[in-house]
Image: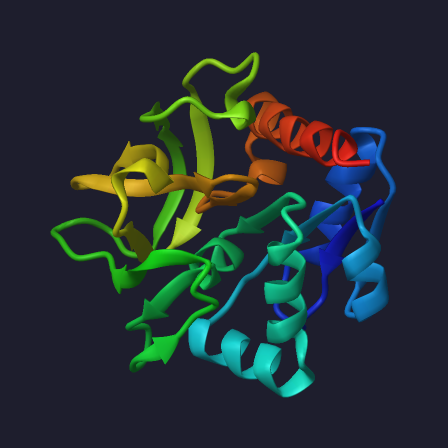
Length: 203
């Protein structure tokens, strides 16, 4: 079973349906026991970093996510969910993140349209089990802020939008995608399927 962590700010329905289309059971939940017993967990997200972290703290879900990550089972953050994996964000003030990956989230800056919205090509920077059977291609982004990993090895893929923009991060079985894999066609669904296969392998 895959837990889709419900903290009130995720694009939960589309992520859940994508998981089910790939043949896996998905459960949208904020229940600690369900999350902790899941084979894999997905932290989706749409909205502001500070609001998301406030909700996670107030509901106790921050500690649940950290305890889940400590089990070594696969965790995937999507869009805002990926940004929450990092240490901090400067979105509307300074906010502390989950701290699972060192680095900060900063605003996109440059002479180009913000938010970054649309299809951009991925460039793979590190080998990863997420890339099994994948070739570099386009994914669908919607964001105004981006993550800057402190460790080069945590950057798995980036894209070019007025300069390098972090697209996929990962260390061990903690992963994040700035884009929405469930909206990124065959490439996104293959990447999501690779994550789900890692989750199945943890049984």
